[in-house]
Image 1: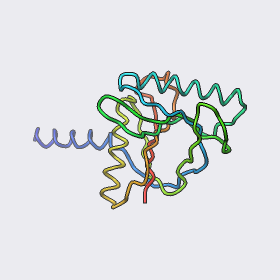
Image 2 (image 1 turned 90 degrees about the vertical axis):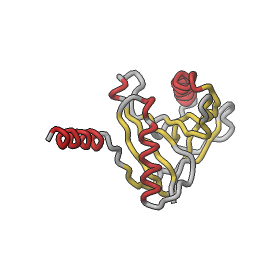
Image 3 (image 1 turned 90 degrees about the horizontal axis):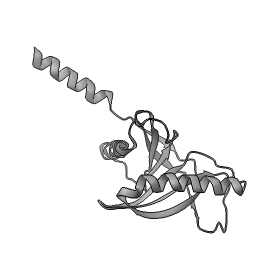
Length: 167
């Protein structure tokens, strides 16, 4: 009997933390980003500093943000992280020195929301990759992680949305 109860509890715990994946259409549009490559140990500080910097520049230039700040993973190794950090904006910009303007996905995307310690957002990435394999979908671009809450909140209250373009 104890074994059955133990298995039931384990099953409940594993499904309580399951991350749902859904399909949506990307918003399209543009984003102002800064492209960086940093050591893993400097990643968190680099993201926070860059978000503040880009927000300040966009505010000074009276450029309207169209959504939450995000990172777009370009390449990750055990020691370094190559990524873009930025904000979606309402219109395409040209000649913004020190920054790039990229197009945001406008086709189908797989998305997953995660609440908890930002060092564990890989769970949302893994959920999407497992879902794509199970549903025979092809990942069609780099992942994007939107920060839906302020970084000053406790780790347990942090919220992100991870998206992958799919086909």
